[in-house]
Image (cartoon, rainbow, N blue to C red; front, top):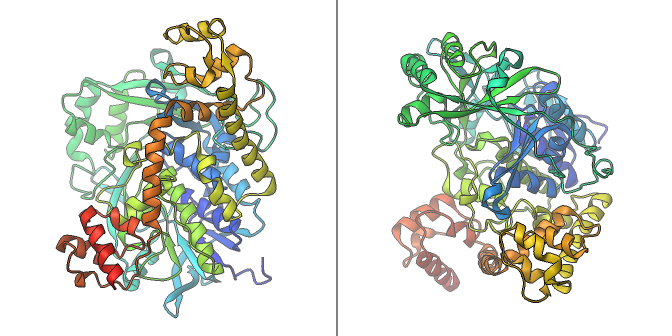
Length: 631
């Protein structure tokens, strides 16, 4: 760090999930970083539900981790419950999800940030961006201090002109309950030529678990087994056999339902909801609807499932997942008391809806740099997304590229074929959003390739090329990849005698072998796990459990993976064709009018980006290549 504490390479505004990952990514790439946040105590705050992961999202956590990020490591240190979702659909679409202790998670993020010698956390509220010569040059805070940098990453989440609503009569400025909104930056965006729009999201009430009749509810236990989000199973300390040195004590979640009595409360008080009473007119997340939305949109549904999730080990407070609402406080209490098991529940915090500004992300390059101002990057909910994991993934991309801009290094983009982070960013900058964006496996054309188990293998080359890992981390990653190769080789070279594997096959409902074949041949059967076969023939040895899972999936889906990887190669070739930002698309005679308009508006950096723009057909791409070739 320079002697002048106000001089940096990169400044990150905001200490949430996008900001934390952006700061770490920039620091790992070699930049001197200041993370500027209004309150240092809220760095890493889990603003909504105390959980990390889920469908596609769990894969993103592992991708962030493979690139040196901290989300997976912090989750491991704070994990009080774990579930592997989609177990009934086959391991190719398994999705890890963990409950986290809010306090432990926040403290873990802060500690992990402060491990980086090039990263400084600074308390202050950003008032204005400093601009010189057509590019960002720093940040001025509300108390008049100026911090200089060659790149700035803004990750303000819901704080950009945030407004909190409870019912139709109570509204207040705020980015989160009890915390002030950011207004001056939003006003400056218009001066810079950035268009903003409004979205809304919400949060449910919390209750005191001691007032809940848990005996009447369905418990959901932890499936912790041997799972670690972080690719380094030996970080920060070796794991002893049969123990989990990284995970705290585990807790149950509980399931209950919104049934007719509770539905009647919502219907009767619907006009008092901020959303349905006219206080809010903006779009909310389709896939995380409020209880009001559920009752209105699905009137014939007999009931709606709720999860009571523990907030932490040092509190009895529980999060009522699935009950997001903007009803008045007294209506929320009536609703809670109409839910089985919550008849005597004490509400510790009311739910609320929040409106906030976002920047439609088609105004960004694929590096997440704004097109309007060089050196300014945006990440997280400010780009129209929802979810901690989506925010963290964007933070990594923005942080790596902010460091590149500051240090005159090459920018980095992640392709759709390499990661869900690549899918996320490409969807945002080429297709835009008309509602808060959420990742799903269905958004990827390469979902067999970009699985949760193989994030290290997919992204290690990128992390290595950018020097993002320490020597120790690199050795651990190499060891993991070597274990995968060893498991594959062992499966191919080891014979499976019929008698040895008969029990494993019968347990899986599979027919027995007639004669000995390689273990890899038996593992092609969908219901038979490679690890069970290794155990049966006595060769499991010290192979890493997850390395064996990856080898198993490579064997089972070999044919599909070949086709996906051929498609990925074609996409990489398209990504290698650079398009000039000065291209005169309207002068192209053989490209359709719709394609010309959309190409001119989006200015794709590569042919792959052009291919993902809705309205640009394969024939348009072929004609585009032909005409550019003539030029």
